[in-house]
Length: 484
Ligand code: HEM
Image (cartoon, rainbow, N blue to C red; front, side, top):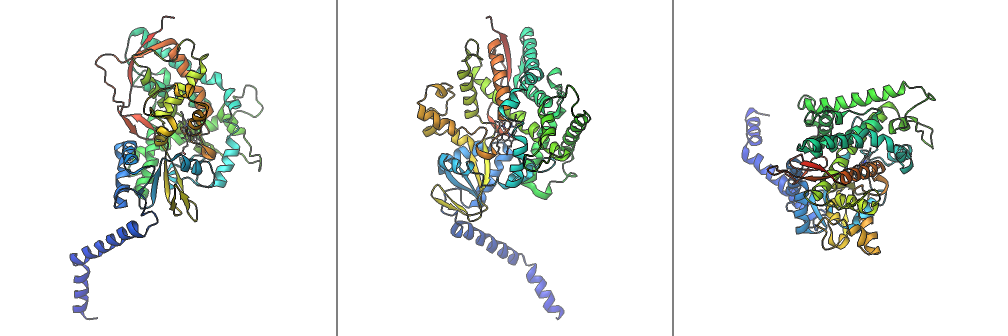
């Protein structure tokens, strides 16, 4: 080939007009494929579809994920397309269809939530999930968690109430969200790691909770791994990777400490950690390895701390500056207490969404054919606010709806209450969460009233981090002891 031919080839290749045309043609063919030939093309949603994906993911960065989807729900309805290969739904029937069956795997985002290694929460492998569930569900049964009631009270609720008493006596303003986080952290420390983190015994602001930062960082790292893929490298974000490493070390030490207690030795604890160490697979006789236990303990810490504390915080906002609705002895008034907690988790579910993937061959959803390997976002928040399920006043906090609705409506409301999800991938820790929630709320409201002092501003706009939090990150209040 002569040098002239090579020179002209090079000049064509590097002619910016040619490059521009090639990029434009590729882009156009993508748009034609997505908007005309894709089986999702007929679904409503932002056009072109890839812009919708960019907008949706920007919600992870701004924290306005929920608000973005609420606006889209109003515009496009109960099922719409978010991205080339992703749909969003808040239709009760379709949600039941997907969540009620174990045949639909969790969506790809969960892969990045493998803390240390694949675990019961992150796994997309139905066989591995079944095995972990078989081993772990007896440990989290109502009976087993019921046996840990005194551990929960002594490690968390008592300490939290002591702190509230100190603030009430001294007339100080305090951040009740931080206090509740310390409580739920100490409870998980005690039941899942065999040792309280001692967060409640530290002063506010220095809550001893390096652990809380490690949890935040590790959860954020999971989401970043999903968004950035292999760009997410330790040299680029050493702080986040360091936090994850420290959590792993923490869990490993807790497990090794416990392993040194001989089997059959007197006074062996009966907490979650010990029960998981002793658990044997009923089919194979296998036990959890140390690495599996580390991953599972990390999930309990990340999934069980903030969710419970935030539920209590969101419901607290309803009782500020007013007579608490739980009159007299709230433990005796259990139906009302339960109604308040259901309503708090309906209005502000800590986990606002769950993700599934369509199976080989695709499936029919709300009258649309959705091809295989499509990510489906199921909006827990959206379903919790549907008037047809919860009534015309679904946007208002009204615990009485859980008591005075007709039996048919109550059945429907309970069926669509997805705060703990449903089906085979429902929250395994819900018995523990309910125990903590009831105990903490009953004790708090029986003894104290709360108000926001003049001049204190709390930014309670919803912000999605790993869970749904108040944007300001705190709820500063004053407590007053009840006279009776
Ligand atoms: C109010 C408190 C809680 C709420 C609202 C909550 C909510 C949820 C939700 C919605 C899921 C399904 C997640 C998904 O599909 O993406 C889930 C799963 C899970 N939760 Fe919770 N959770 C709470 C407390 C806890 C606690 C205290 C623990 C453990 C100590 C825990 C451990 C787990 C685990 C291990 C899974 C995965 C279950 C599986 O896939 O089989 N959670 N939780």
